[in-house]
Image (cartoon, rainbow, N blue to C red):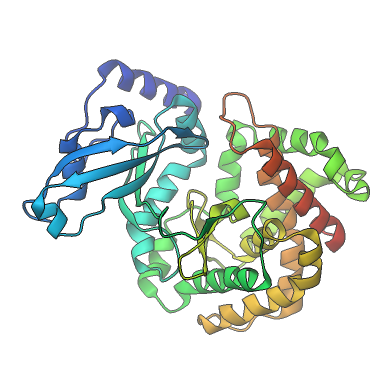
Length: 379
């Protein structure tokens, strides 16, 4: 049975049984099926006597995952324990989301990150309170602290990215990529994650290649003419970049560092969310992907070499042996192609997958990345 048939069969079976979640081993089939008893089981286990008395669900927000906020009221023991009263949740309740996150492994990946990696990582990122993914049904839910009131700005393509903010991104990436160098526990745990090549190959099961090729053709009006004329070379170059990345030293990499996955924390530092593409890989793709999507074309052209130099200094400060600029610069140039694929496929998503991003943001990121490819002669 192919994986999509397996996912559909599991989904149909779950819907027919329609079991309510009771213990922390259970997963809700929808946000509406969540009960105060289940929330008590997953949130209050370490606070003796604490119970969830009532809760309210926020508005639905569906994309690559089913997202919703939950506001919670505890009894006195729960209040005294300082348990979280506002959660931001990501789930794979719909069949479409299970297919997308199940095939790619995104739900498993993010649950593993919040359960085994996040507690050991000293960076600006959300804190997880409960994360579980079922490898048989592909149902999942990630429950994070709702940081809405603490964040200065959730980023988009309209966010004004100053030089200071761009440097903050490089600090976080350098610290994150270098985190495994001095932490043997983290170094072993991250080996359980997929490499980017494995993740990339899994996404091709639902048509990454066809979607990315079609998306490149559909974005002709924002792609530099010189690059678009070499359209037939783009996908082979992307495959070559993925292979090249797989031959490099590995550590913790985020995998999807486009600007919309960043936010400005209350202390003014850049912070990174959405960890469903993270893995055991080289950090060069993260740097290329972050710089290309975060900055206007003009600022990228003016700052990118200095930002890459700054990143390498931060990486060395985190305990990684010194990396020569020229060798990393070639990785940076080449990995623009693999970053572009994440957005051309978003413009033309394969049949049966949900729309992942608003079209205007998708087109802008394609413009920025493809212009970087042209400027850097990535091919």
